[in-house]
Length: 87
View: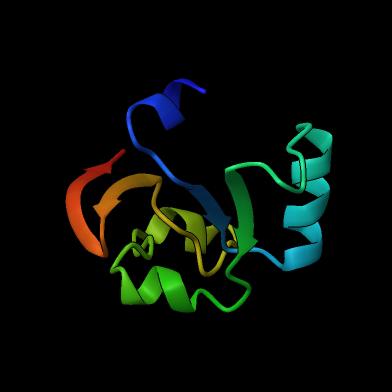
């Protein structure tokens, strides 16, 4: 309700993972089907690559982790990215 009160329509959370995993995560976290919060999968990392958020540091790849995504947040208004925060 606090987000809606300041004009936020949707909160999209995605992960380089498949849709089944994301659905299970949403259920585990108690995210209702009709919630403004949507958890989505990016199984092939296509969204991650297009956003230039692919983790390219050798650390994760050296231990067998591939196609990792940086932790980030975007604030988008009418299709225009207004704020980008990368951890």
